[in-house]
Image 1 (tube, rainbow, N blue to C red):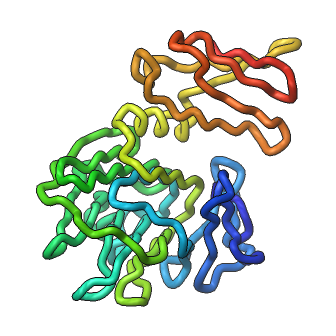
Image 2 (cartoon, rainbow, N blue to C red):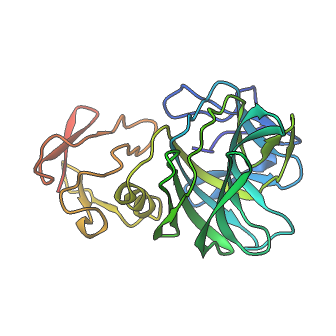
Length: 274
C-alpha cells in the first residue's frame, strides 16, 4: 500500500498478502513517507531511490496498476514504473513499464531479438495519475488504462524470455545497475501475475479514483453501494479486495451470481452490499 517508512527495517514496504514485500534502496529517509490521497504515499527523488524484491517473478503475463502523483507530466528522461529483467546477450533485458520523458505517454518495452516498444496514445498529466498495464506475452495486445481511458495496443511479437532478475519499482535494472529512476509519489501499487481484463482494470481505476463504492452507516449496519455503471453488467470482473482499515477485519467477496446478493462481515456483524 506504499504506506510504510522506507527508512525502516528491511523489507520496508509490505505486500498486503505478506508474500512479496519490497526493500528500499538509494537514499530514502523517513521524510519520503508523505501525506497523500489515501493516508500515506512514498516519494521518490528521481535520482537513486527505488524498491526491489529478489523473489517476485511476474512471469511473461502480468498486470500492473499504479496510483501516483507527479509534479510535472514531462521529464528529461523516461521514468520507470516497474521493471523485471533477465540476463541476455546484450545486458540485463526484460520488460519495463515506462513513462516516456518529454512525450508523457506510457510505454511497455520488452526484448525479443531487438527492443520492442508498445506505446499508449493517452498521456499522463501533472498531479494524480492512475495507470494500468496488462502485458500479454503471446504477441496480441498490451492493455492500457491511463486515467480511465482504456485502449488495446497491438503487440506484434511474442515475448519469449522468462524474467528472472529482481523486480524493481521506480527504476530499471539494466546490466546490473539501475537507471531511468522515477520521481513523484506512489500512493498504491497493484500487481497480478496474469493479464486482467479491460473491465477489471477499468473497475480498479474507478475504485482507486474513489468513485466506484460509497458507503452509508445507518444505526446498526453499514451499507455499501456499487456504481454498476462503472463495472460490467454481470459484475464478472470486479476488484474484490477492499480494505477499510487494519482494525475492522472487513472481508468482501462475491457470494452469488446475483450481484445484489453480496455479503461481508465487519467484526462479526453482517454488512450488505447493494
